Image 1 (tube, rainbow, N blue to C red):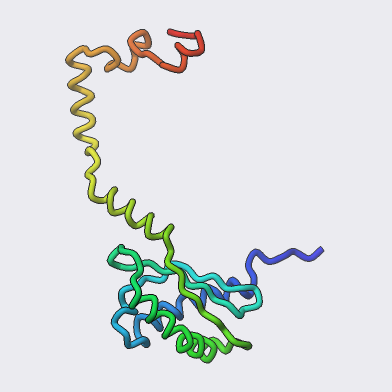
Image 2 (cartoon, helix red, strand yellow; image 1 turned 90 degrees about the vertical axis):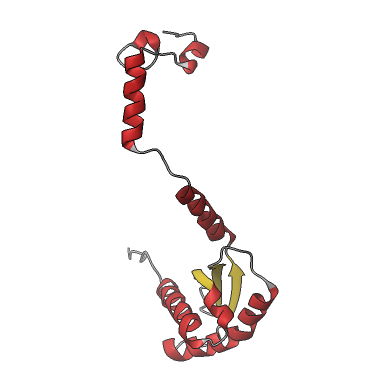
Length: 158
């Protein structure tokens, strides 16, 4: 029995199209709005006729009307250029879609980056201070001082 490959021709072409769309938007499209977006993904149909390009804005905002109009205006140019450079048969149609998932991930990353987690030294110093102060639960070797809420609910309290 013949094994099915883990990737198809459409997957390989999809990867090439993603790289080429990024390059074209960065270097070939003359509209300055093209430099405001970052391509996050490209999804190609199995018949290699439809390409769905997902993008986010570098500024982190929502897409606005002049940007979407520019993407609609440049998609025929991108399709012709991609067909010529990758020697694709048939007609390629490109649709741009705002990637809300990637935008959400970027916002979460920015929030996490802005908050400073406690350093290991600060955590160790506060743990040592609790042990020296003799607070209950500070000494991990004392099992009697620890209370587990789950064990009390199950009737197996310590």
